[in-house]
Length: 355
Image 1: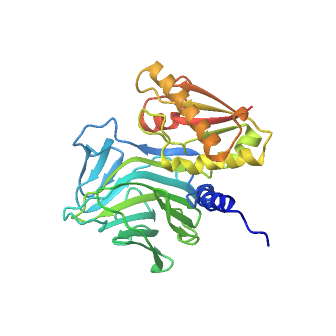
Image 2: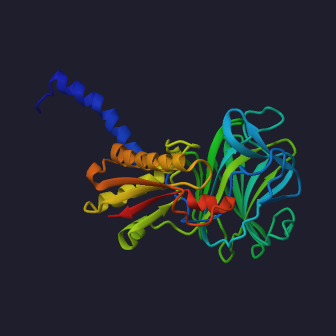
Image 3: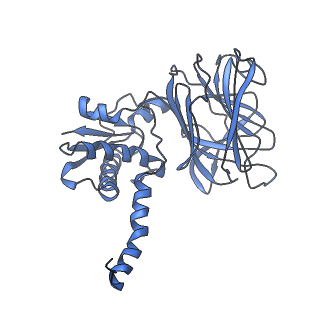
């Protein structure tokens, strides 16, 4: 066997971690892509500080607040009880929920406790239906110390059925982007870029899970913002190749910025995969905003955001520059009237148009 010379050996040695890092980035386990139709959104931007948000229900108390470390307005849950977003549009068997989240507690303990997320099949007008195990069926997820435990239940099973858990710690005072992806019985849960749970039979069959519910005890005061429910399964390949256009809500940016948020990368990766599998396809990336703010600034922001997406496709996934065009329409092409929070969320989007 021929020995490698020292310079060649050193070159190979130093190149291995780089290759591994690139490979890890491409095959990231973070695969969350929001649903294709927004049916509920709340960032609390239009409400007064100190008020309880009008789109939510509770048997306790809460208020809109700001926090110096993180921009925007936040809904802080102030006492033990339930908190439910009152989505007016009907849920489907396939949908996503995602939001920014900070866990806080009065005891200054470094981790989350006393908090439960629930997906419930029940009556929105009767939140106390079922008592301690709400609705006709449900899935309870509880972050406690360094573990996220879960259990499901239903009337037909006479109560609790299956249970389990996964290692993960939500640290107090830190911001997380939490996401749930529901596909019939399957549920996946993410925190930032980590997949915490993937439960093929987490939701018991023959029920429609139409309520998302947060439960707290008296010692914790968690905060949320940018809360979104989106229905349907995103089928980017079919949308682009057959219909010639993708409307994406999966690419998010910092406020008034063209910086792409980390939770957007699964969507960008999926677009890149479609382009790699169809090398003859060229696309135009078009940014859109809502009507808040100055028209000219919105136009400029939408153009810069489209360029950011293009640059990410080129830099990270090696898509050829010649296959990508960009444009920005600002607030000039709304999908819905800019007259409420939900419609404005529908108008903030990135479109991919086949050329």
